[in-house]
Image (cartoon, helix red, strand yellow):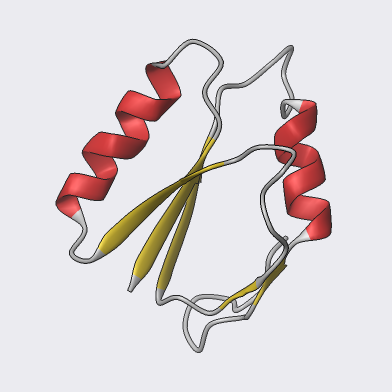
Length: 81
């Protein structure tokens, strides 16, 4: 299973997330909002799509990354840096 989390102020990042999701089998798109439920995500593939604001993350994406748990994988470096 795969999940792509996205935040899109104008809709462009949503379109990118949607196109990526179409290329990945069994992929669920999840909009990043302040009301999103806290969970531990253990999917095989987790992607995060967002625009860059002033050379950084939008605050909503920063809060999402700080407050959510992603189980590390057995491949890659297995860490969320």
